[in-house]
Each structure stands twice: as C-alpha cells, then as structure tokens.
Image 1: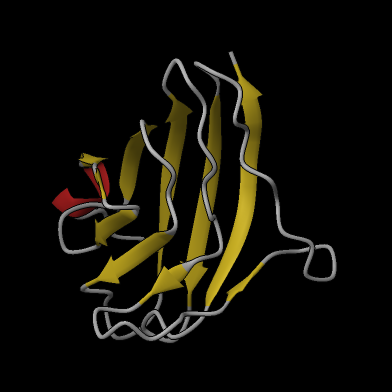
Image 2 (image 1 turned 180 degrees about the vertical axis):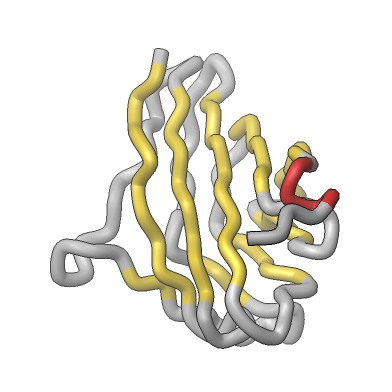
Length: 123
C-alpha cells in the first residue's frame, strides 16, 4: 500500500450546533473532544472508491451523547452505517475524560460506511 501525506496527518474536529464535519481530503485520523452533544457527522470529500478513517472521541469534563451512526453526505442525505453484531449500535462512552476509538471503511465512495469499535472507555 502506498502512504500519502494525508494518511500521516491527524486533524482535530470541532462540533458546531451538534454537527461535526469530517473532511477526508485533509486526513484519515481525527480527534474530537466532545464539549456538546453530537447529533450528526457530515462526511466531506470522500474519494470515489474505497477509503478508511478513524476518530478518537474524548469526553470533556461533563460527558455528552454522540450519535455514532448519524452520518450524512455534503447534500444532507443520510449515509447508512453498518456495525457488526447484527446491527447493534455501539454506545459512545459518556464518562467525563474517557475516550473511545471508532474506525469506518467505505468501498463505494462514502455511500455506505462500515463501522468498528477500536476500543472504549480508555482512561
């Protein structure tokens, strides 16, 4: 596999009115400090074929909910997110100062995402 500079970059995500923009033209590794509830992730600039990206989600000192399967494209259309286990959605840790890691893979340019839990409740 060929590494590109985008593969080596880690970007910090921000929450704006419950939305988090994930720009795959910038990076494939992201960190998010949750300082308000996340109701939607917007996936921007996915490549036309396959790609993968990961998010380290860390709660601030309060602990807010995160809709881990609430992805939309830039036009506002919902992107289905499939998790293993027969469709059981993981619950993002809401304990203050704890972290979870989630990874996502697409094979169709971001029309469908496959999600996996990399670990939860890291101290």
